[in-house]
Length: 234
Image (cartoon, rainbow, N blue to C red; front, side, top):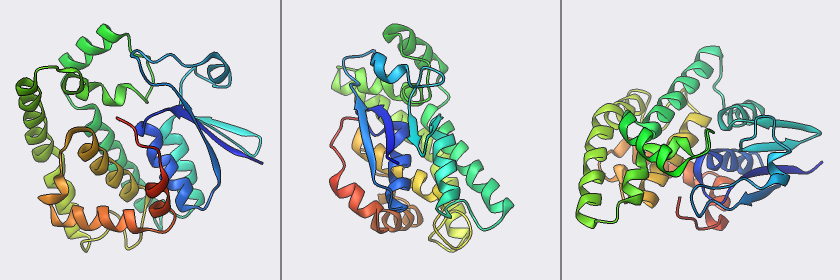
């Protein structure tokens, strides 16, 4: 039975799913709806397949799942990427949830301003990036660089310093336990997207995060996906 992943033509909330599926050796159809121009409009033929009218959507084995973290967690368990016991599984959830907080950020003013301006769809795919939209949409280069620097400092203090310590305290390679988990994959994705979207290279300043990032990107299956995936703005 074919595996089909529906999402926008961006990395976004579906990229960790693509990485996990690739790690598990799953051959899947990577079905992409147009993201631009904003606001993105989900094609009717895809929207009708979904439960909630949002993507990502995963179809497989006669089943379907909506919501990025639900899909990621399901396949993480299937491919032994959810820790070695219940507590490690809970730590994976904690760290991924924290990374979602990082992506969303705390600037509700930005979220309200730009979500209302562009009438962004209410789903976990686009709104995860709403806090970064002011940077992406700012036309003045000086102002944009100022916004990028402000975000970088805040994110470093609230998140990256702590993730660096967590990895170091756990031996310097993984967030949880002594083997790869979906939390590592999610963190590597966030670090990679930060660089591609905004030129923010946290891995240059955090040796443990660099080791984790590089380890994930060298992992069989994920390495091959990274080499062939489409180049997109987000």
